[in-house]
Length: 155
Ligand SMILES: Nc1ncnc2c1ncn2[C@@H]1O[C@H](COP(=O)(O)OP(=O)(O)O)[C@@H](O)[C@H]1O
Ligand SMILES: [Mg+2]
Image (cartoon, rainbow, N blue to C red; front, side):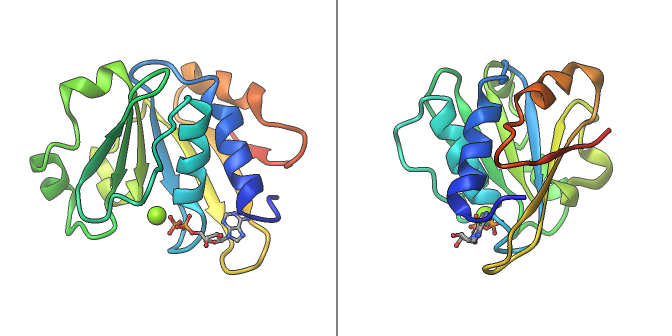
């Protein structure tokens, strides 16, 4: 459970230390759940000093840190085909970490090699955040979930 946006950012920052080149993290949750807050914290954990904002008017924003961060927001996207045609999967992403808001919109096109971060709750309510590795190599993220805020690992 995270009680406020700062705790969600702290969780993102803690998980960022597990990041390796080529990782993909799918952020799932309603509008206002805290996907962008998580991305801000994750970016801070990668040592990114630029302000991370929702890339709503571009498909993908790129930031420089310990690893490059590619921040994608599919909220306004009609379908997966459009996302892929728009260059969602790009060679440069192999060298960095890709965070995808509304990744579930990719449906079948979403790779299994990813970490799901599922945020439940909105408004002023506490958020429940579940961390679910799509494949075993993402298990390393589970070890970094802080005791406080208590988030849940799910397999
Ligand atoms: N526990 C929490 N975690 C994340 N955000 C929270 C939390 N509690 C309140 N908020 C607020 O909810 C909003 C989340 O916005 P944002 O991260 O842009 O959502 P999303 O990207 O999922 O649409 C922010 O205004 C933030 O301050
Ligand atoms: Mg957002």
